[in-house]
Length: 241
Length: 241
Image (cartoon, rainbow over all chains, first blue to last red; front, side, top):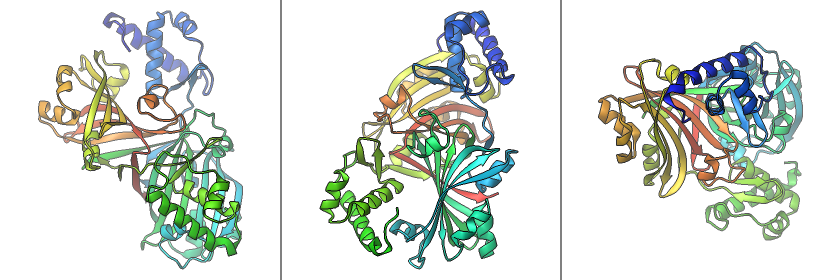
């Protein structure tokens, strides 16, 4: 933004008007804004100021600039939480005031790989129940989940009966899932999963790969959760080391 | 992965061989692996098993499958840390045993926007020093940083003299940066920044937007840091809410 100081009041005023108009639904989520010259005419400012306003809205994550296509209004996230708080995906969706749902993509019993043995910290697991599901909020696909659990602990046949694998594990084992070790990973575009979650090619996902533990430090559930970033936003308080 | 149970030992053996060969540098970072049929010949297994091995390596983040191009070896991250630990970018690079460097992209004094006023929680800031820099590790570009600080607190002219804005702020204000409120955001591809960081179009970035505070809760520094995910990996312990 490089506008004259004298124009700054006009910039702020216009920014506040456009923000207000977005909030009021004049420009609905996922809709394209008018081209810059039209916006400048509508808000009666120069194109330079209008461009600075749009720059600022991009920085605030209110709109997304799609190269050669236009500027689009971002939907409001339905869920925002501290990343250090562990909840099941169902819990997260329910907290956002939406109804969680599940579409099963695949459920199979597989041999544990070397990686599974390392994650579960045992060679004793004979078979792994591996479940792929799309989680929905009020019917919209919002998270893609790959879960792995010891098949002797929670038989795979039971999983269809229950939305929440957390609940199921807790019912079958009488143990509470207490914490998870989680790797945070940006995903630009996932050939299969982005399409299932109705993402455009330029819509990134946040992948949380997590190993869940019980209160007595038993590794019990591995999950890879792909979150639509426009729906789930995570934050954290970082403390100086 | 859907291979016969009887083939599982062969799968594990091959996986461990390929992992070993990657670690030994037989397939260097960023290099393309041989096509599947060649790999199957080299490791003397069926294509089905070889495909399961590659799937597993993709899941472990050791390799990346680039659609229609091939499978590439991921470089080892130079830095892995708990996301709740706040360090300056210089500190992070130094901890990884590398020498931090800086390339200045832009430095300007601007009027605070409404967003800046909200972030710094004051209308009293007259001008903002806004700095864009590429941070390097042993000369390689690894993080893109946009920093904003009250220009009356730390004059922009001083910033060129010091790699670390943390240090500079602490010298000028006699206050210690103690914690930051941080939003975690995946970035698929950033028109300008991905190119500057030498990223391929399919290499995502992790953006941390953070407001830094002093021990007495004064907002003092705003930063947007774009991290190359293959270089910086963050994790977190999530506790059940």
